[in-house]
Image (cartoon, rainbow, N blue to C red; front, top):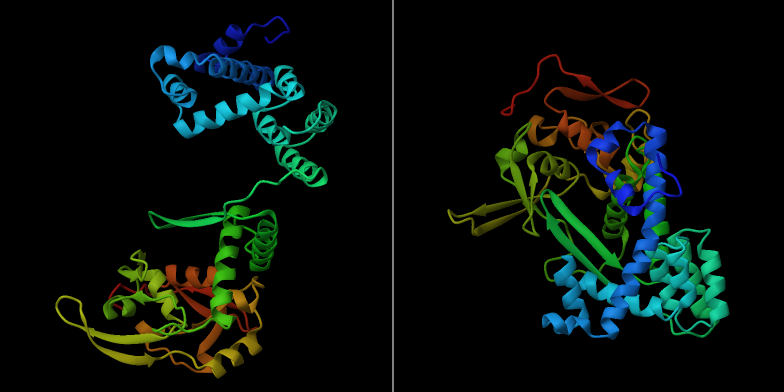
Length: 383
């Protein structure tokens, strides 16, 4: 049972796995509130201690060259984390209103870090910022500090804009840092694209990720992008003809060096130009043929005009989020590239169609809408 007389030691003992397992939900919630309420006060004590250690250069006792190095050594944190903590400790110690807010448990460490950016504020201004911070989120505190800096002619922080694309198994992690204006453009565009894609059964974060990809695809397909020595910027997939013609399995390589499944390659080939490339035993190109089987621009425009949005039942994804798909697979079943054999399908349902192609076929319901129907006989990989 948590009471005002409960000590720190008792709270920590209450976090033992066995003790937590015996608590009813209501008791567990009260215990959690008590521990979390204590956290800012512990952070305040820690920051005051770090600032005092730094001022006294106590880290020299152990032969450390500076306070961040000593703190990283003793706490086990990364040096970059320790450095930020030392900087925050120095700033908070010089801002009594923020330090007291932490000690009283009304400010979190995240809020204190944002308020530390207003170190030039007068004591009265600091008190006002702290009072506002106690009833709002850390994100809103950051915006209040930004506004304070602009209104009081303080120099706003310079954002070091950056974007990295880091390969991970099966894909990549995109990390970007932009200024406030750029962030607004990105957020509005990504959210708008995510909304237009539909996919209500998909988590919002995943929908936003697909929205970002949709924006990139739309730009490459519609913008007047200058051609390079090898033509317009293009997503290139290298795939064996056997994989292209198969029903399932296989792999293909992107120009970035990453590999995708044969299913992804076959889906991309549905509305992409296919180039014949003959290679020698060492995979060196010997002869490059012309593009084949791709719908003409006029056919694509006609399909878009006719279908207007994804034709899969229940989907209203706009045309810019769709691809022109062969109703009868071109690579495997020699589907015809004519208007009757083409349909507009969004990327989500296009991928679904290919993933289930061995057991299902895409058919017209009779009202212009498409749905997947189980085949009478499943196809093999060699079909």
